[in-house]
Amino acid sequence: MANYIEVLKMIKNYVIDTNVMIHDPEFFMKFDDNNIIIPIPCIEELDNLKNREGLVGFQARNTARELQKLRMKTDESLHAGVKLESGGMLRIELNHMDPSSLPDGMDITKNDTRILAITKNIKESDKIHETILVTKDLYMAIKADALAIKVQDYENDKIKTDKLYSGYRDLYIPSEKINYVHKTGLPQSDFEEYIEERIYPNEFVHLHSIDDVSHEMLSRFKDNKLIPLRFSQEHAWGLFPINREQRMAFELLMDPEVEFVTLAGSAGSGKTILSTAVALQKVLELGVYRKIVFVRPVVPAGTDIGFLPGTEKEKLRPWMGSFYDAIENILSNRYSRPDKEKRNHKKYDLDDLDKPAYTVDDFIDMYAQQGTIETKTFTYMRGRTLSDAIVVVDEAQEITPHLSKLMLTRAGFGSKFVFIGDPTDNQIDNVLVDARSNGLVYTIEKMKTSNITGHVTLKQVERSPLAKVAEQQM
Image 1 (cartoon, rainbow, N blue to C red):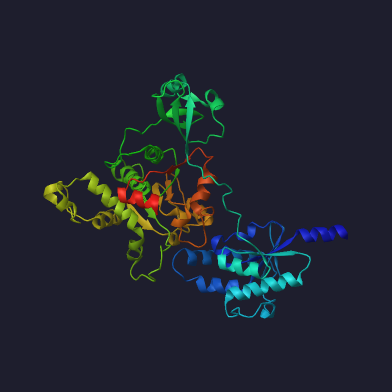
Image 2 (image 1 turned 135 degrees about the vertical axis):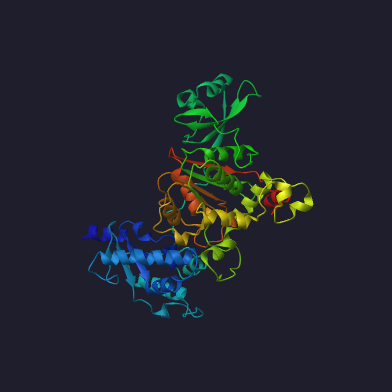
């Protein structure tokens, strides 16, 4: 009997806040054999969020679908409890809503307060199992702590490292070994004595000679050896990489054998324009892929302007500004204009450029009508298979790991996916993720061991001197 009690004490009650379910609709698979308790106010909140535009509404609907799947697998009600494959139990809590356990001054009309009351009452009534509130809401966590409720963030998909994989390293070796990289490639067995950490497929290595300071080269680890860059002399729609990290990124973007590329870096480091230029080159010039799909999460920076009227294309246009800007800059670079006054014109002139006069909107609309360019948000990705396409996902730090997996599982034959973004906290507007739990860092760390994936972190800001100073000083 004593052993049975000890086993019971090992099982915990995890009370799940609404934001956790929206962050990961498959949350119930991550708590092993413990009890998962969903307060009924959380279901009410999901119901209220289901019609919201953007990621929150999309994830609320996903969560409801996952709970429905559980409900259909058993004759038991969700209130009585559903046995999970992990060995745990999931139930929706309809009781323990008495707010008298809370101190005066708390607004009992708020759902957060009701969730706290349920958690506190379960804690006080169940002395065998430890009760823990799981939330991603900072204010909820503060209030729970004040009420002596144990609280945790949802840690299951957070990256457990302080140093994000950069995709490259510096290595000091003898000159004769660098020469072999040029000739036949340098096998891992010939340089592994000089490295301290594991090297990953498609990782870049900046080689420096230990006996000749002027001897160096940029190489790439592929097929278990260091090889020279393959695309270092090429360009995409007139665009050349202008620093070391951009050369690495360009190599991955141009290589058809690398099917998934992640690029991280601050604003102005060249992530979007490089990805867009290569996409245009691969589709419009070389015909390697049939179409370009630009995807962006709908998460507002700052105060949301609210509902946008119009067609899908009209709704998406404000969110796709980074792609439009990139294409406009690429066109400006490809078709140079004679003087500053003409550079200020939004319409290109036929006589000066020897090409039809059109705006960047005209350019995108023309290829969109042909089915060559698509602009989408995540809301329209479920059920799709993207084959023979290059898919560029901007602001990937705004999506959850669940959504990043959803996006990558859309990949069909002959496709290439590119995730770009800045995963630092000051560039994340989605309250459901942070610098260690967003979809970009999640995919960087989880996918770095594959032969068909590659990553580069871009460090230098090349947009303008002002952008560089703002990034460094503010």
